[in-house]
Image (tube, one colour):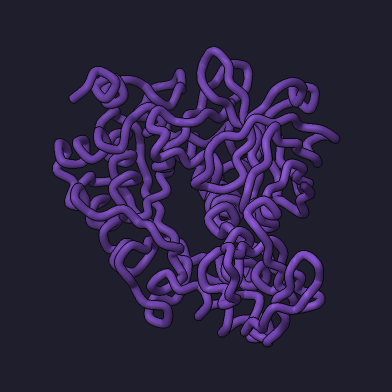
Length: 377
């Protein structure tokens, strides 16, 4: 066990002054390794821990596939871990909220020609809004999760990228409000994932070797089109594929089959590769062009969330425009509504998030972000 891990196991990682036995912590338990280790660590440290697992959809209709989370077996696994730790476990049924706030919105995004990120919507709504409320109703002092981000408190709580950048989940949490961040705790933020696995084995947790979830939880086999076609069949009407000069190159079977930056599956022949550079839902039309056509520098945002004061948005920043993307040098204007990249970036899609970061003496801090509304070269 490394020194950092030993410190996390033994120290007061939540930052409360009062006695741990009188500090009540709700742990959002998915049934996976990360949240199970969080519950075990906090129990070992002496906190009063309550595990809560969310039932988010009808598992019988959607089915459990390898690589997804939040299925029926995950609820069972979470309960078994809680039994092992001798902590209370509750299951909250959020099916209707999840369907309305996440699944329906996911389908609507494809109808609009956007590329959605439902994990952000899930964190923003059922997890950090509704579970936050439930934890408050239980008189909890904090809500802890297994996300890999760091929460640093000095005057106010601030969010930073984690120690393990390969597991960085700050992009998915940009919409966390300041009130929520003050209440939240992320005990794994200073640990590499390999150490979390080792902790799970050391603590003899039955989920120690359980695979990580990778796919969107409500999308069977990773095939999002089956969900969109069932909920929004109108997004699969045939239409034109055009080039940047407006010339018709071919036909498509529905705009939901395409995302900005897509290269494969366009089914239009050319000596040079085509990329999807625009999706127009009003005209039911897909525009393709070269990789150069795909590059954008100006990004316009809507529904912006700040984890800072507005006067802190001055100077040089970094932006992340997709969950797997790198940090891009940029400047932020118009109270966060406009981001100008120093260099052109490909595959920037409406419906995704653009998150602001800045480096300081502690690390790389999240200042907030917004939803990409449109882009310009």
